Image (cartoon, rainbow, N blue to C red):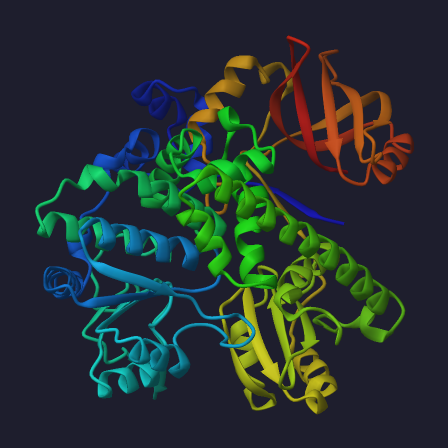
Length: 570
């Protein structure tokens, strides 16, 4: 069962429509995305690169840029230390490109997911010292590495932090005492004293802002590094940032650049994964290109993904792209196997009664625990932890549902963990094997989740009669793109629809094609992707159905047909 509800936000839709020359339907969709003020609507509909904020508004940006300009002019050795995910790899590339194009002596290092774990550690700092590095600049990490940075400073290093994660704090009697690392400059829009207007940037976007400011200070043409926006777009979508404000402009712009990218590595990856260049969208970054870049940090080393971005010849690029695709294919296989084992465990043990699922898969590769947890959470709509056997003790990842703040709940049983961190919807943890069962019992005892909390919620933009589904509406909806987290694809609904001529198609038998007909006799093609057999079974028992859907145009052999793509049914 699901709980459907329609967003009923009020506004003068006709007024908005007239003012911005859009349809009242589009005006309602924009209002549903929480835009009220004229300025916000204008920025949403017509924002361009020129509307992006000045990176110098970030706290410590001036310090960071001054230090780097001096180091570049002095020929000092600079090392960029990133992270092993898609955001970290692209942020590393952005800084390395920007600094080297300004004539800086720069190299990179990325921690190994399993050997080093996340972020800056002593080993990385010792390695930099051995290599005669003068300055370290972090990206997509560093804000929580106070001890490591203090150690590096004692050894005489200059350290600049660029990050986008929350600043760690101590709770001092209800007051938050923020713990900033003792670096020479700390650039992070989440600093409580940072007045930068948009807080939702990814690590690569913060890195891009720094490079931009550096170009201005060194009196070079900022337009020369515009092409790095494609990396910011890949990182923003891949790190699942909200596609709002500046992020939407970065992604919109970056996607256009990516379609005609000059980067041999990205070009090769787009080709070998079969992404249609002319229709390349945020979806392709999130579900095709992104997972290949992430796979190298999961199953091998993220340095392979960085090598792809740095590839100079087509031959090298094609070889690396095919490597990453193969890694991602094996990651997919491992994931499928892990999901099967998890479902088997839930269905055949008392886990099925738990409100919070804690699944222990000792053999599972620790880097895919989070992906499996996400899939199980979607299947059962319950907060889910997947634990695996790590090199030392048990490691795991959690994924949560809207009504359960995972990080806060974990804080209530923190004594069971050797290490943990995260936020409302996702978390990571380490614990002793002896504590696995206790963790499952405790986290369930603490959980106050009602039956209602455990019903998936479907948020519908508006009821839309079939007669309103036109080609011009479909093309007008493209104005709202790119779609993703924080700017979801509009979802419409209609009830009392008759289903005609349903049939299962597709080589995996997972597509249902049919016609829908409303009370007035309007008919339209419909298509449903998913468990087609269950859907067909359900349809056969009902006279009339309600569907949520989005409209689209199906092009086949030169013929264009309007259709609705069904998302939910009841």
